[in-house]
Image 1 (cartoon, rainbow, N blue to C red):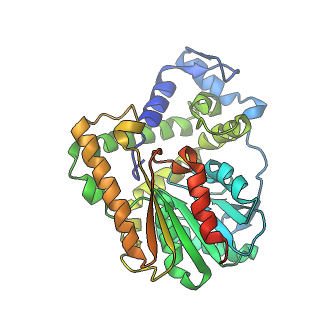
Image 2: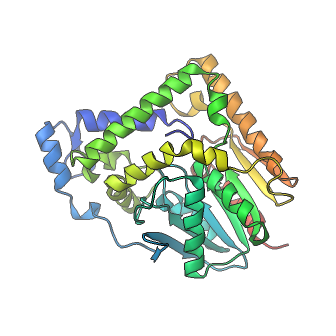
Length: 346
């Protein structure tokens, strides 16, 4: 999706749903006809059905959002997932943080256990719903905000509106409101993005039509998830409203970018910017870029991360030298240390 390309993952998904399916045993892929694949997706084994939510479902004005809070502490950490992702992706991070502080994750409208919300799915709309969720559940600051990728932008929007309640912000390889303009300098990257966007929408249509279900997508679950969470991931990812939520956030991208605050917007609020140290050519074997194009994109990405530092006079950059875009997976201790540094009152 648009925040940063995931060539290998989406290309693998495209190939999987177009060429082969899976038997009832998720470890045993085999070739199938289209009719067999359609039938398989309608016969979902029990372990791929959606379990009860670990948290609570809360009405935020016509639809319900899922909020999951664990741990105890003077400050509450609020984690925000990237575009196309939801609380499940951050479960490992949450479990570790909960040993020393209070931490909450939630599913934006349409993802995970949350119900679809009103359009357009702009950052401002997302933040308005999140504010209603926190108010309805009685969660209060001081907050430490940590957002990954697209979630970094909604985190910045929330922080700007609640400076007096926020103790600090951690941006985890965050998207940047000017990245589309910057990436336009590498036409091959832009073209590849458009191609992947079209492929994702095609897959979403097949999910909507019942041709692709949890059985088919299970082998593509993120490798870092334990088995039970992989089952949950497949059950949630293959829901039509989940894929439509990602498309809706993508479609509202330009509106969201125009809403993100600029330089100095956080005053002297503690801000930690974590940038991936490994670039496109080093972490994503499916990318179609030449070496020079990948190098240019990686240079742009680093400069955008450095520009995030201008949002606060109390900001510092951490480069995750051994990480790709999902820093919280590749170097979780680095992310945990950054969040805990802000979550622990001095």
